[in-house]
Image (cartoon, rainbow, N blue to C red):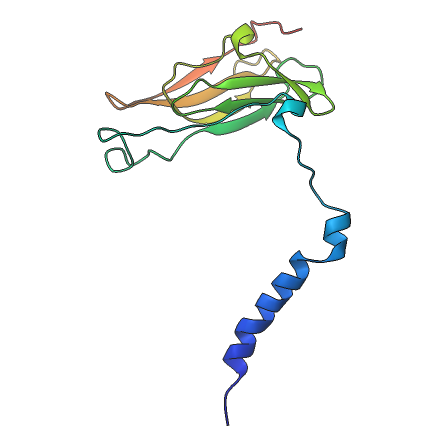
Length: 158
């Protein structure tokens, strides 16, 4: 007599997964809708380039870093987006409503130093009632970690 319990144990979860992913309900009423960058105004890529001197083998944190911070930087009631990149400038997108954003990085002067950004937080650090953008960076040579706070409530975005 064969023992089919192992086969059933492997087959039924697979069958349930396939059935759950392919139901008509999911096709007609999806949870998410794709919004193209041309519609939203958000264009960002954390592109990494490597060579023989600088890669995952020579720098163990090569794929670590980047981040997204969400908060209302201009106190208009809409959540704005700040994105950090490793080898490219960071970007700040001002929420205009209805999933429309404007890249105000240059105006706000918050592109960063092109150092290896490893994360971001938006918080009112100095207690002035306005969000500050705090992102951490790693200077590759020499290796040193520093925290950089921009904005400090001194910029007015209209």
